[in-house]
Image (cartoon, rainbow, N blue to C red; front, top):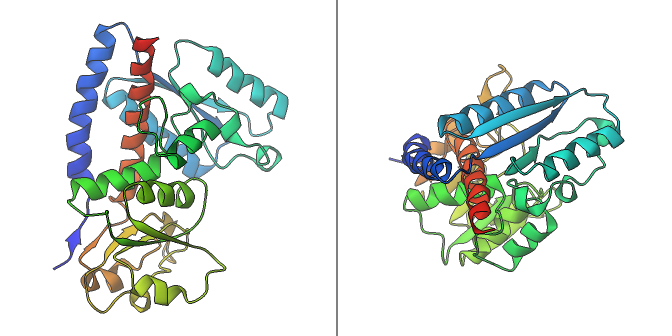
Length: 288
């Protein structure tokens, strides 16, 4: 029987601790505040930003969605971010992606100052990850951090394991590869030009898919030994319009030792990680 890696129990446990941390910060006159910059009205982005706001408020933090017109000029957009950077009452800022076409060329990692970059995209935060700096002054990208937390809390061993990651984005694939390498895993990062992909996926201990293709991973990618852990990062819709992952759950679930569902797997852990980073950014103010 496969272990279904639901995140609900892990989220509940961490949430309790975050509420306590937030309470302590407030007692020290630090009121954690996140600003989420949303340009336009992309339906998925509206859902994601609303979820982030709801969870932040659940733990006692402040969260404002800064809604900007989809036709905002590049100058005005940058001005908005700079105002947030300079606002001492704000501890964290994220820019909801994707941005409209006329802003998509911007490197958001350079826009938010590193002290408020709770998304972990700033070059200094990325370098800290590469250098395996474990101090609390830098932030790890939320989805990779959430994936590692979920595996650790589920007693899944990472050190010494062969890990295959499909997808090389700066949001998930690349930082996750480095994060797991820092945890002493042997990581293979695959992408659209990878040859013999199925050979690689069948011979790994942990398979992580983050490519955004509904039901891409089926039984043909899985080892016959039924000993693999499958982490599905995908958030897609199937032909019936239902939310699904990159992994064909029904075809794969009984062929592996553990698997994350979609929804209810990696997604909630991303938001938990964002809240953890926000409170860390807030705590860093106490040492200034």
